Image 1 (tube, rainbow, N blue to C red):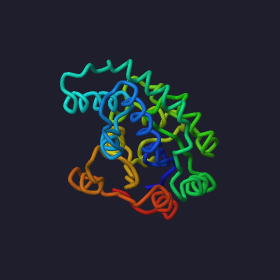
Image 2: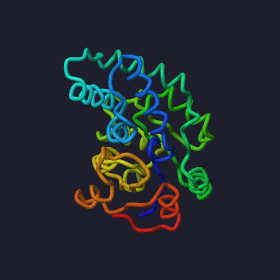
Image 3: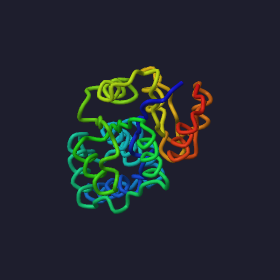
Image 4: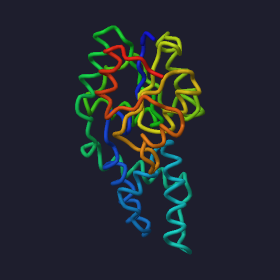
Length: 232
């Protein structure tokens, strides 16, 4: 296949955002006097958008602190957003080689797009602060589609915005949600092992579910595209 566009997930694919996500959860736990689930468990909750993360967090609190008053999802979301804003993005790091890899794709004439379940304002702020702004021909966020990954809608929107057919696009992501969204949209999934797959090793899940393009990180996935490897 001739790759004309590469779409990228954000959290766990381009940046390690777990430290910042966990810090918000830790502060919220202190604020409402509930147990701190710990960084590793919060990492297992990531993968299907912030609302799902909050739902999983509340479910964990329900088990960990029976009888304790629990927040509603919308209330917890508002509090988390405030804590994340206060904490800033200092703890978020771009994975090594990521920026260079995306720039190399663009220099080769390949279009790039960001496809993330994160809401638009937080996405744009993070891109600006981490030197990722200006690297994408299109940006599709959780604010732009009613259905998020693993549904195909966001990737389909990226295809329209870049003017590329599904047969000529690949989706780089770190989770089952990226993989399933890619499959549903008819594009190849290039999976990276840097991020969050709801507590299950990505390579194990990928093999069991018929996904065979697994890379150490996004830089390696970019190199594979530039070297015109065959994907399946």
